[in-house]
Length: 432
Image (tube, rainbow, N blue to C red; front, top):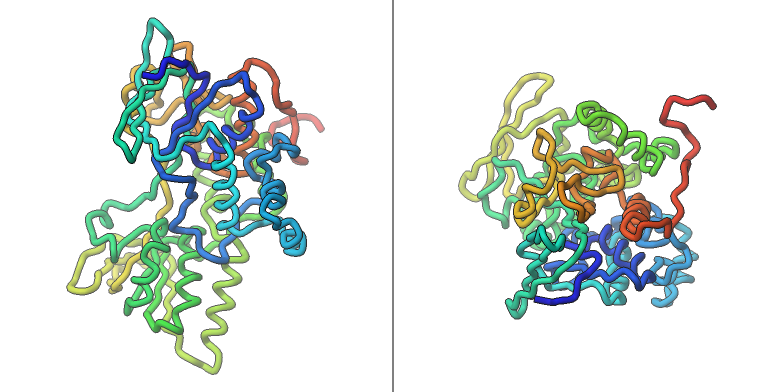
C-alpha cells in the first residue's frame, strides 16, 4: 500500500477528468493522481472518422474557459505542433474530431498526474480514518497497489447502449456505431448494410458509408423511429441552454419535474448537425445524377421490434408506428446507433451504503457535483448526472466550468471566479 495520502484520486481519464487534471497542475498544494485502464487517452476511437467535426467551438478545450493563459490550451498545442498558421487559414471555430483527440493525447502526455494502463478494481472506505482506499491494477504486470486519498472524482464516462434484442449476435455483423472504424473494412465487402438510429453518430456512419457506396456497391439503408431525420437545434439562443445559467436553473426543480423537462429536450443533443444532414443530402443528390437508381433507402417512423439471424444475413422485424403496420427487412450488416448510457462501475457498490440514491437507482447529486454521502469526505462526479444537472451534463463546453466549481470546493476558496450571469437571456422569473 502506498502510504502517501492524496487530496484527490480520479477514476477514469476522459475529457472531463483530463480537464480537471490539467487545471489542478498549476495548484501544487493539491496532491492528485488520475487512473485509466486504457493504454493511452483515446476518445471514442471507433468514431474518429476523417471529416467529422467537434460539435463545440475549439474554445471548449480543457482549460481556456477557466484560464486562457494556461499552458494546456488548444492554441498552445497548435503552437507546439507548428499548426497555428494552418489553423489561422482554416478560419473555423470547429475543429476535426481527430485533432481534438490528438490535442487531448498531447495534454495527457505532458501531465505527470495521469496514469494510463492502470485499472481501478476496488474502492473501500476506512471510517475511523476518514480515508478512501483505491485498489489499482497495473494492466501489463498485474501488480496491484492500494492508494489512500481524502476525496474521489469519478469520470468513468459512458458505454454504448445496445438494445437486448441485438445482444448475443455476431459482433462482426451486428455492432454499435462506437465500433464502426474497427469494422469498416468488413463493411466494404458486404452486400447490404443497415444503420439504425438517427442521432449524430448514426448520421456520421451513414454519411461515411454513403461516400463509399458507389465504389463498393452494397445496398445501404437507414432506419429511424423518429418522424424524420431531424436536425439538431443549433441556433444561437437555443445553445445558451448549454450554459452555467441554465444548469443552475434546471437544478432547482424537484426530480420529477426535471425528468419531464429533460424528456422534451431531445433536439438539443439527440439530433443531427445541420452540416452533416447537408452533406448527406448532397451525396444523395449527386448519386442520382442522370436518373441513376441509387441503392439507398431511408425509412422513418419505424421501430425495430426484433432481429434474428437467417443464414448469411439478418432479418429485422420493423413496425411503422403511425400506420401500425409490421414489415421485415434483411441486411448482412447491422450498425446500431442507439446512443450511450452512463458507466456506473461495479466497484462503486462497495461504497453503496454511504451513497444516497433516488427511487430510480440514480445518484443524488449536490449542485456542486458532489454525491450526497453520509461521510465527511467527498466524491465528485462527472458521469451519470443528466437527471440532476440537465441537458448540458455531457457537453464539452461545460466541462471547464464544472471543474472550476469542483476545484473551488475542494480547496475551500475561490481559485476560479464564478459569475452570476454568462448569457443574454433569463431563465428564472425575474424583473428585467
